[in-house]
Length: 285
Image: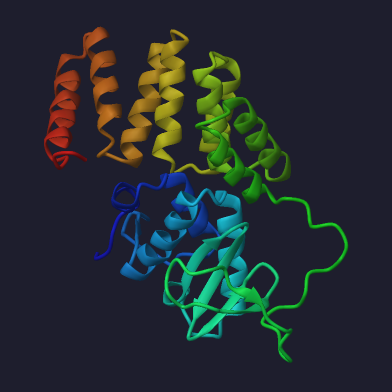
């Protein structure tokens, strides 16, 4: 299977895997699927993500970047890929340049590109075209954020304000109680805050919503081990490894627990697997 894995794209572009997966679910990316369901991203997908990364670096919130890409996908002619246009942040707006045209995908308003050279003054508004690219926004109040938008807001807030991030994930789950990644991220934040009861509940909910999530099973094992339930924790680690045999940290933790329970052969097997996986990680990765 050719293409870039989610981990590789995350490492190369410096984007959280949660953001990449969220935008994939929204249909903004079209990766191929491997034999075990893993995503493999094309060069075109990476190009879209690279443009999005530059907007994020310009302090555009992830939620706005995603909303812009969704609107732009609707505005482009059939067959015109998101990767074929140029996106840039200009003041409070995101602008699109494509084949000599400049427009604001948020409003669909065409703009006059007064200076094509990069770094030139911001394009000015042009007179409305006879056939606008998108209808003008309605004057009434904007729609309420969706579960996915609350999830993206939580991802944005994690580094600066964990409390508000937890609230955002909670709002996402009010709208979509089976949002596996919101459960997983909220569980991790609660775990870090020492609320082990709620963390366990959210990890279990994440695993119920996505039974193929090795990370949810692994995190469940960690919280169970923190609660002193080592036998249950070992079962969770073993499930995580059935779902993803290359999850090195699960091998390491399972090795410790097997050794503590006198299961030396299994402990050595997990430790050997952990060392093999560790040796295969490229330097600096």
